[in-house]
Image (cartoon, rainbow, N blue to C red; front, side, top):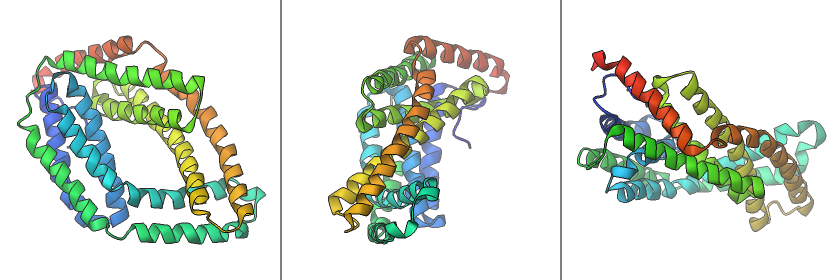
Length: 299
């Protein structure tokens, strides 16, 4: 079933348990059916979404820290495989963006070096994928045993408000000083909010779906910003390529692109996280409760 609430779900808690079980059930098939790099990306996305959903139950869930930690730690084992591939993608996107003003041949050495690093990172992927699958399956199995206290509306209101408060704080910090670290924190909060809005979208596709799309766009923009920062840090640390002129030119282009990305991202961040967090959470919960009443005959 899709990653969202359905009228047939008996309660919010039932929705959360169903989502956990479905993601666990499909994990092994994703590894067997997808190329390794796609499986890494897909499983890490699932882990991120499940952690965002867990945060909705956190106010009444004693096992939150262990469940969240299991998914977080397993996803980290795959980060090296994904990071190497992202560096290649980021490099190619940056060169394409500035194609009219540079000579691609000047960056041939860096391109070759990045591709070598990506091929090396692919080694040993299988064992880390197995660990990720095991974590998702274990989370799915344990979800039926979790004790989640409190009414659905209270859990949802506090869970949403907590994510929105963290987003609000991240926005204010980035407005004061938009460092890569502060923007990356804002990106994480946008990804959490996106997953939660995706889950709740059926309650009002126009309003909640609009927030989901905005969060997705925000996370993409800041993600590109972060990837450029990581790329320049990597080439500087490894002294890649040997041509210092090419390194300097690459990172100058990256800095220009980062300014463009930040300028596009901040207005979206203000739309998502600029309002009082508790007021936004109450508005979304009221929408969800109305939808529950309207669809009660389907349960």
